[in-house]
Length: 442
Image 1 (cartoon, rainbow, N blue to C red):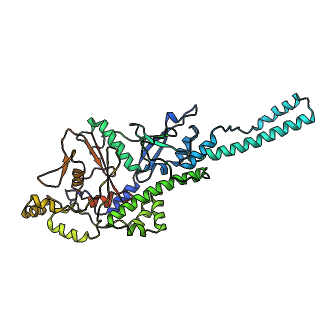
Image 2 (cartoon, rainbow, N blue to C red; image 1 turned 120 degrees about the vertical axis):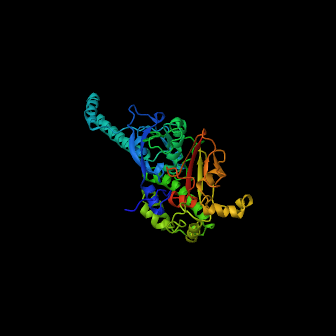
Image 3 (cartoon, rainbow, N blue to C red; image 1 turned 135 degrees about the vertical axis):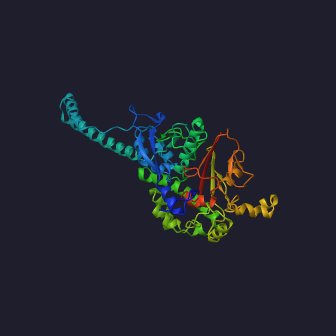
């Protein structure tokens, strides 16, 4: 057996194998009903579940939401139709149909009326009418209560409402980073230790009341369709809303990659459906069949471990299918995403002002200054208060102060600051083609 290279490659050559691993990855959650949404005298037990990183909360937890809604107050459906349906509940009394054991009671009532035929018929007619009304009300109630309710999710540890339009993996990394900041004494200087902070299972609460409209996007597709009053139809509305946001995000990313809307507009309905079905089922194989023709250079080799200027030149010849701009979103401290389209190569004109050509060639030959934009370059440019470029190499970004808490990750891991952004994007981007970089600071 040949000896292994002592210098590990930050990104393996196969981007698709890493993407497949990300799609196969999941983590355990513990879902419980929020006490403020409990109307039953007996609270339901929390539910343990494994959840994929590349799905959405309302897609992955549909059955669990329907289960917990039975213990919650009467809630409105998500969307405009739900608010109209909620008005139908006000003032409506639902009577349960009589059990089989109610027969003897009716007979007893008949005897008290003197046993006349008219009294018996009246009692039977009244009972039959009452049963029909109760059955009718019960059916209406079951149909309406079976509809998917308006609900929202909350991180139990921090009390933070979870943004339903973000991928579960992005939400988890944000909450994990926030937890690390709270418990930073055990994390300082040990970001890569496996026993940092016991965050699993991830504890999530589901709420059916007091929707935080100031913190979350409304679950409203803007349509007014009062016929959507059952579980299947109302959940389809939620799925359609999430799908629409995903599709728009994918179109944005494709426009950045190709500097044109031509590719995004050329995706047919079948391909769109196949991508979405793959996201709902966390099926990378099905996703890859379409994505291989969409994501620029997905089969290209890694460039992050290039060791010489000659190799740089050879690799550059192979990197013809590169994106015009890399779609990047930086999630800083849970704030709205910072969308930062990034060029895959550095702007050499900036360095040429400060350095002589001989110095640039010398750095290139010793691999001190990669011609490709690195993760450190992006963080230093976007968050200069916590990341800085090392002036001796012009490449490696480090925290400004050792005493300042900084946590970052991409798809749950902390890649080297020297990794080329194009490599990270090809291997660790989400299904909407955006590379999400999580950053949590003090």
